[in-house]
Image (cartoon, rainbow, N blue to C red; front, side, top):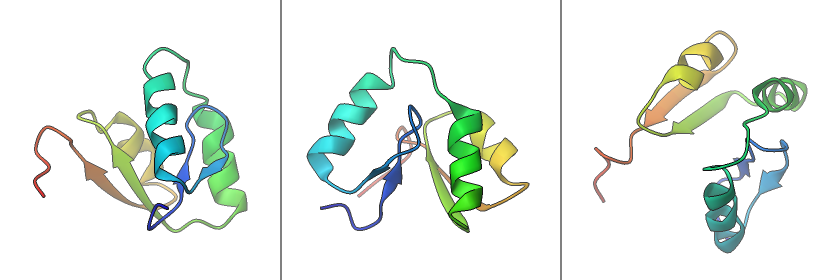
Length: 79
């Protein structure tokens, strides 16, 4: 189980299991991101805090208008 749910950038559904998250991240490499759908769902569900994973902060910059955003760059992340 994930400690916090992830929102799929492919279809906006919530992912709560680690294995599902792994599969989703692999799919997102070669499938289009449905940003408008995901953004709308997060607004409807009254999400306040968003963590954006990836070296680019393009989506994070756009989301900052509506959410508190934390960018997580896997190249700089240390456990």
